[in-house]
Amino acid sequence: MSKTLVLLGFTGLIIVLFTYMASFDSKSNSGKSKKTKKK
Image (cartoon, rainbow, N blue to C red; front, top):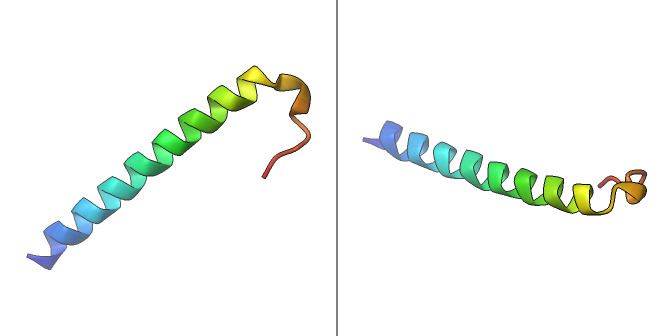
């Protein structure tokens, strides 16, 4: 039972990470000149 919960949490985390990465990528593409500033 707990295994499913862990899997669900992990999947959610991955989705959030993916969304964040996509958003960051889009922002980076908009300002390519500011590629030096990477957090």
